[in-house]
Image (tube, rainbow, N blue to C red; front, side, top):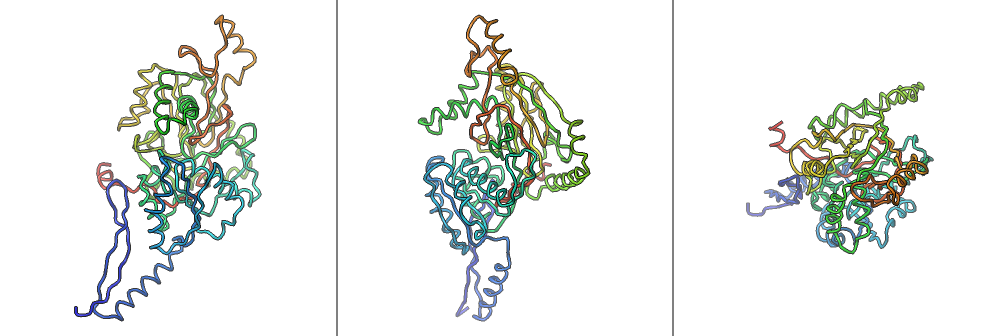
Length: 460
């Protein structure tokens, strides 16, 4: 061609391990009118894609993880947003809860989405602010455990820049910033369950990944005292907690999720376009319609299950909780939007057996295949600590019988500990006795779920 006319299309190229890469393709035309026709047609089609964001609010945590959040956004994300003609308003946070408080005050209707640059803590801030703002506008009291929360129409995008980035890894399949930015640009949408955690009719927090008592609660409580150690504090506290081997006595009551079409041990992970999430939501809606006839209270009384004992750990996961160290997560078959949580009870056992259980999180073996491990798919659960239940009588008697001081928060390993803390998505909860309820598909992310690996599909 003597006089070629060309235009360049920016696109997504799939790479290994669920990563997306920015790519570009240049097309040449022999005639200028043909080139303009292609350009006009492409721009017209792109303009009709209502799912793609045009204006975003971005919160950057400059302190999370290794402190690279701002640099990651400016170098890897902002140029891609510019190429996609996405305008942004950027807020670099200077203190904790600034993003949450900002979302209560600013007008979010002018944005097509909210992007958080940071770790799971930054995402949690945005989540709490967005849910709280939505409930306030709808006149819903968040402190009522039985309140029907209103889903937010605004999507959240996650640009991973934290230490673990569990939420991003479990919803995209990688913690790569460029991949997350491209999911935002193409306008992906993924509904996700959120659990509300209450104590005495007071909302404590919302949870999307891990709600852990015992082992994981002790780790987060101990690591908070060692922030000066940096990220290595989690490894140090994990080893220390493992050797302490504390168990905690209490009662777990739960309402099984009868509406779900999957189970925690069916080895069917949540994937893009998940049938389990879609079908479970439909069945849950049918179940909720029946409750309008006044049958809900009667059914719940009949279906509640109660488990008592001494536990090394009590974990509730709304997602697999996968991360680079544990590619399959705490519950590999947990689903993002099925309206349920996987409740994992690890009863008192030897250190060796508990180590075997922990090691299974890093390999392909069934981590629930132990006599001391129980797993249930639930839509509500309650926990009452034995220490709280008979604080004034039983513990004093045990102290007298041992001819020594009563058990403290850090007793000898041979003694059952009095109380642990709840680890709620990396934050410590002050109350040990809680009530938890799963709200089906309460928020939406700029994601599509982990796409099926061709090899994985062939194996199954």
